[in-house]
Image 1 (cartoon, rainbow, N blue to C red):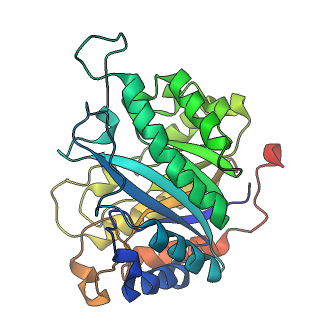
Image 2 (image 1 turned 90 degrees about the vertical axis):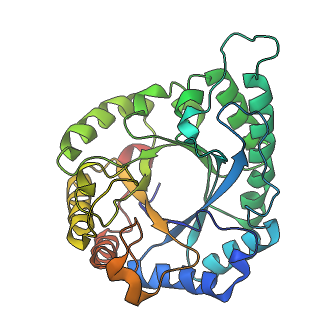
Amino acid sequence: MEFIKGFTYGWMARKGDFEKPEAKDSMRLLKERTNTETAIISLAALQDTAHSTEIDYTGDHMVSDEELEDMISYAQSLGMDVILKPTVNCKDGTWRAHINFFDIDVPCEPKWRDWFKSYTEYQLHYAKIPEATGCTMFIVGCEMVQTERRAKEWRQLVEDVRKVYNGSITYNTDKYQEANVKWWDAVDVISSSGYYPINDWDNQLDRIEKIIKPYNKPFFFAEAGCPSRSNSPYVPNDWGLEGETDMKAQEDFYKVMFEKTSKRDWVQGFGLWDWKAILHSEAEAESNDEYAVFGKPSEKVIKDYYQSVKPDRVLAATE
């Protein structure tokens, strides 16, 4: 697997958003301003609560299939690869990591089999799109910590997706959870979210390397990033952390992350978080304290790093 110079694009985009001229401008700027070569288009279906079994991927909260296919085609016309990442949110605001059901079925209670049935239908619907459009990878789930113990169901899901999509498949586990997934052998690539404290990268990389080494599979951080907010480098996963807008905090995080991971040849790329389909204006960048990097010092750090990574940086064990 070649090094993935990636960025997550379009998170929380709604129906019609990809049809706006600003969305294609955003994709173009993503490539020009950061040297990104892979757009990870991330979708957010909805279920009512963490204990609901029906997943809605047809409402106005989702871009249409037609506009999604058109955006994939546009990114490819720019010379970019595309990875598709359909994930799920809970309407009540509960983080998807808490989606959970009884392991032993109880009458009148929601059940794992019903949730996986709905989730599999959702994944199969979207797996057809990267097959038809030539996407380089498909991510079958993201940070769904409580579901990960259901290895049998996940293995079946991956098997079902392979009947529809012939490219590489990965699952994006959450930070610190790499050892929680016992079915890494079922996917082609191992990935996790790299929201690790700026002062703890060495420890975490040592830990992750030991976990993934026996699988002999490529690894990349399907998400990684930090808000431009004071103290965020120490808890980069906390998007709600209170603090002052701080461009240097975000810039320092990226510098350290790239420095530490560049010494580990098994880290085969990033899907940085995140680049909006509709960007804030560049004039607003100095007051923006979110994960976005457009118009911020971090943008140049990312561009320089992606420019510096040699295209032939490939993990020897996967050649």
